[in-house]
Length: 171
Ligand SMILES: [Fe+2]
Ligand SMILES: [Fe+2]
Image (tube, rainbow, N blue to C red; front, top):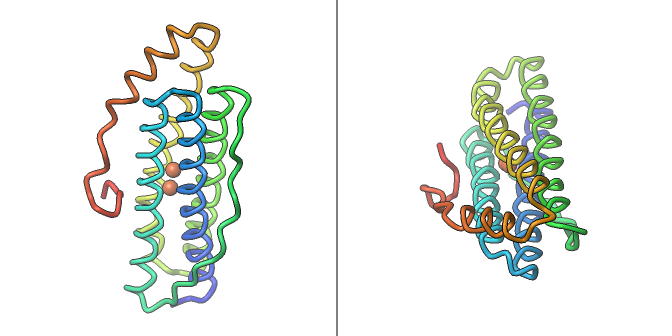
């Protein structure tokens, strides 16, 4: 496959695994805060990121590319408040969306139509990911001064079902 696209996809595999790692770290933070619903939600979000990485991993193999796994840096582990932890997720999703748009631009410039089409799944997924993180961030901000409000959100987040496929992706 096109070597520039192959490199960009390998870097995205790394970025999705880092998302997995970061959200696990956020989950651990929430467990330490006794907000088990938030923790559960973040853990499922981490599983989804694992799925996103594996979908690219499989695609690289399918196209005859070489998968190159890179070292994962340690994610942040402490936040000042529940809202700043959720804000870290929102900021990270915005960063991921940017990267995905750049890969679509690259694949288009390189006439790699298969990659362009495959990456559209990620473009759509990011719309949902950013919207969900944005809503959660603003809701947590709204109630942060009231433990009652925070516990209500925690109870709601506890009900998030696990991803359907074993890889954690929704496709
Ligand atoms: Fe992702
Ligand atoms: Fe994500």
